[in-house]
Length: 345
Image (cartoon, rainbow, N blue to C red; front, side, top):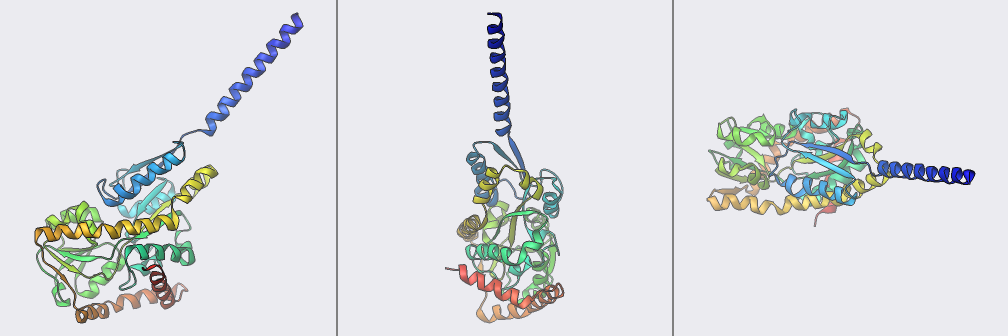
């Protein structure tokens, strides 16, 4: 009896230990994963409302709530928009959504889609950009893990006190530029470029720091730029490029099934959807100007040809720069245009 009780007691203890080990193992498997996503985007901006927040929520749901993505908008975690890529690279945060153009000179090949007359509509350009990245741009982003590239609709001019109809109308105007390429284009057109991130444009216009900005129609709503601009010129020469990218080490540390969820929710399919998001939001943005009775003009064919000729120096400068890096700049432009045509309706 004594021996039997001892065996029974040991068996009970062993079973209890096994249960504890299983419980601990189960708890480790279900350990909460927290990822911090940082962006300059305002909470009410279309990118945050229709893309970043829903995407984060979808990842959480698909992971069975094992993953929590904390979204910090409007540079809440500190730094400037130009710091975002470095924050992802250095592991200050896990994921960022930003414009490569906010880091001047850091992504020269990406700039091809900002050159005049390369971009198409946002849907085609976002897909073309994604394929172009896979073919040409991997080395530019080798120190992070890009999740998705996409592009806005092509930009137009929005000014506070003067309608721009011809090249001569740019003289003396201070125009907000989003990147080095857009600054070069504005300078070639005769304007004085002033670099600044999008969230600063409203105050800059209201205080007269700049006379206008070069942006898609969709940006007018979240930044309330229709309140501080009066004149609009539809140009559609170039677009802005975005990337959402992740710290490489943090990505590698994730369980394989979580990496698969992230991979399946990003890439080309997401690029196409985001291009559609930007394209569809152009009409509501333009409607704000129409409702206010603001004049909207389009360039004549002859005037557009003058603008393209004036900005040819920007294209040649870019070709020279990337050629010095060992690339055939003209071939890259041709390939970017080919890809835009491939994905155009």
